[in-house]
Length: 267
Length: 356
Ligand SMILES: Nc1ncnc2c1ncn2[C@@H]1O[C@H](COP(=O)(O)OP(=O)(O)OP(=O)(O)O)[C@@H](O)[C@H]1O
Ligand SMILES: [Mg+2]
Image (cartoon, rainbow over all chains, first blue to last red; front, side, top):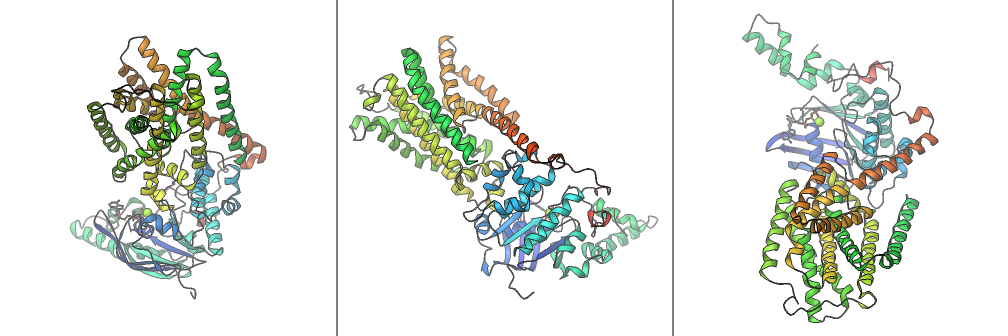
């Protein structure tokens, strides 16, 4: 990537309740592109995002937004410096109207026109309370809320959670459009395939560390490779240990030490 | 949106003018006195509207701020300060501001019920201080001078309506600024507010400062009504009962503030007439507040929501085809993947099943 990164992390560590969760993360988010962060449940993706946004304090390393260090700034100053954050779980303000949802986040320069152009359905529903919107529309409002302040970098954490495939596709298209508008997008996504399709660079987190970084194309469709990156040797270790302790049991049962979703996917 | 606001502004101003023109001419002296009480209560309600209704902070010491306003107004009256009641009111309000900010400081660290306890503690200590000493002018019965065209009770009613209206218009304008909107965001999530560039500390302190100012003005108005005030006018029980009314009615809308004021005045009178202790009223309000808390919405919020939604629904139906108006798309041929399928490539995810 020739352009200087809009967001650059170097050696970033973030604690949760005094326990280091994210360690020594170095990554670049290029303007006009989607950068993807992948990883299993509990890998520390959300913690990393919170650290960037300032909602959790980074303990080590530096975070630069357009070259300026922001790791010591309180969250609202990071936001004003040009950081938009779409938090995990749908966070639309349910008792405010759609328009109020957008207005609360608007800074002096931002306008609602861009959001309404991206999501015409929001404009039509702007006087409805967000609580009465469908899940997809609520997420559009949340995404829109991150855009009205004219951010340079947008962090998006699992926007597709619990949404219908059709809506997820629509939102992914919008994310790609944001990148085309010149915004630097850092995307966490449970559907790795979808993210890798619109992404240019991918990072994989495991236990709070970056275990892989490279072009998205490399990982597209490479399910086994991703699986290995997600869980590393842990699965193998657990299986081996179980086999040692209870030789009669099938080795693959060892996967139940993983979250059920992961276990059921064990090859 | 602009139009809507102009309409409600017109409606509000119209109602204010009508009230000023009609009520003093048709009501008996006793009812005019009650009407003044209602309007003074409405101004205090406006202060609840900012801190409780908008910012969602539990403050139980609004009457203590009011007491500061009343004290300053009476002190200025005794001293014969220039400017008259209108200027004194502003000064009384301003005097309450630093106290409001001081009470707001702990609110930066604690919230919810714990904060309510802190503010209630302040209300209790104000009670003690007030009871130790009389209000200025109480000893030699110095009467407060009302400004010229408003000296009679009918005139003073008009005066209170004007003060209320000015505050209501200012608050409506404020509601559309970044600060005003940030209060709504605080109420929902301080985390989200911060992530959207809101300085939570500044926004909260501003809410305390402004609500203390309004409460101070309300206290000054009360001094103007009664001329001689006693500490029990600002007792902590009052703060508590008014808080309950605020939760119940939703005084962040002007009609809610008026309703709250009327409610308070009428209830107090009924209690008096029925020889019931004033605290009983507090119990009633408390029950109502519990109901409102359970419902999650105050009365005026509910009414406004219903109205707005009806209008919006209609708009949607008119503007959009039936296809668009349906929130949920027809079930896709490819079943949506189960929640949080954590396969690396999400082979059950939309990409592969739908052939993205
Ligand atoms: N507030 C917190 N206090 C203590 N521990 C936390 C807190 N938040 C997260 N953690 C822990 O930090 C680890 C990483 O959590 P995080 O939410 O960052 O993971 P994630 O990669 O976003 O997972 P998911 O895919 O489920 O969203 C987990 O082990 C979690 O238990
Ligand atoms: Mg997460």
